[in-house]
Image 1 (spheres, rainbow, N blue to C red):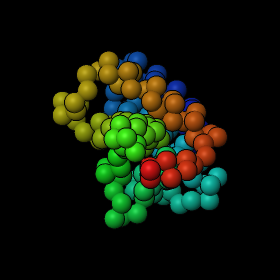
Image 2: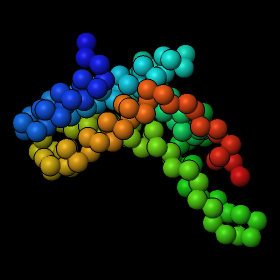
Image 3: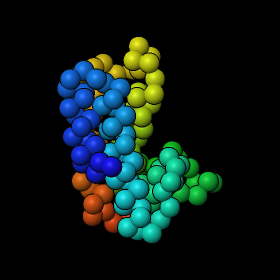
Length: 147
C-alpha cells in the first residue's frame, strides 16, 4: 500500500502523462489516507467519506453535529461597534473539498467533468498541503466560531 505522499506523487505523474482519471483517483486516495491516518492518531473514527468530513471539520473547529451544518458556519462576525470581524478560514475542510472533487472526477466520464486537463495539476497543491499538514494537525478551538 502506498503512503499518502507516494500516492500523491503517483497522482502527479499520471496527471502529467495525461492519465487524468487515474491521477484524480490517486489524489483522492492520498487525501483520504492522510485524513484516516490523522484521525487514527487522534483516536477518531474515519472509515467513510462522512467520517472523513466530520474529522476535518473537527480539526477546523467547525460544528460537526447534524443540527449544526458546516455550510452555515459564518465567515465573519460583528464586533461591539458593528464592524465586521473576519473569522479564521476553515482550511482542512476546504482542502478536503478539493479532494472530493478529485474523487468525483475519477468516477465520472472525462467529458462530464468540469475541469480542463491543466486544472488537475493546478489543484494538486491543495492535496499536498492537506497531506503535509495532517502529519502534525491539532484541532482548532471551536470557540473561534462563537463570538
